Image (cartoon, rainbow, N blue to C red; front, side):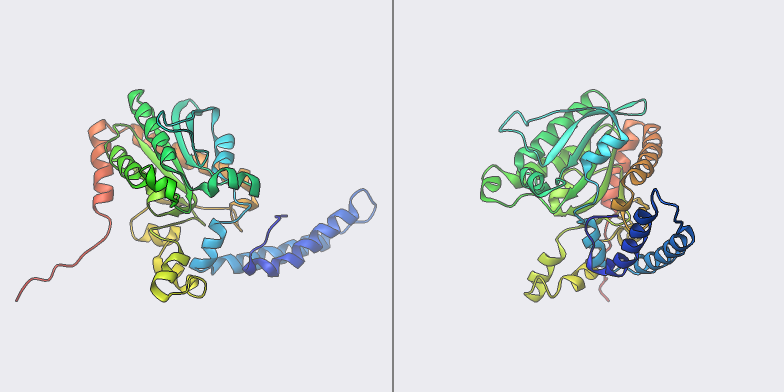
Length: 323
């Protein structure tokens, strides 16, 4: 059972508690409740499918931010081998909100970059809730250059509300650091594969998101602004308008795939990645390997053109000629 339930999941709580109670009661005893447990599990499965078949944008936003949702460090540990974390930007310091290093994906050596939110309140405070400072983006820039020098594929994992907007971050050049990353990623002469594993917010996400392939987990989100921020600007009420804003922003994986912004929606276990983290990791590993194998067949010029064309064609506009 999960530790935390969202509001729309409350109908599941009673059934899950009853199943767990029967399993505990019958353990080590001659009593058998197999039939009753099986019936309850079938009812639970039907109810869960009904709930998750009709989620709106705000409910998916809640799932993307779920406290139990697997973080980047979990996927790195479960998918990759021999991860060696590299620290510091060689200019100011190290930023725990951005992690990166070298690892192996089966027989391939790759360079990894990821936002890290933290799994509990203590770690979340240490990781600044996954909001990097300029030194985090400059550390990412250093590792991007290293990946290019050694001709290793770059894999990035996005999970951030956005870049940290504090005074210190602005004083140290937050906007410049993000802009430099965008330029560098556009010019990298290596395969770049990025996946949104939770929340992708604004330029803070895009700063490690300019890839040849952009993937999203099924219940992740990717947007220029949070629903609360959008609602506060448009309707002067971040709380009351957040559900409407979430639907209007088209920030879900299905929405963005339909708009051509992303390349694949990676299906999650029923109920979200936190229901089966290891199963989610195995599924993501298969998808990463498949896309990386395709990108490795492309020469440098093809990689650069592919990445340029991908972002150049985003968005549509209409031209009205004079009569």
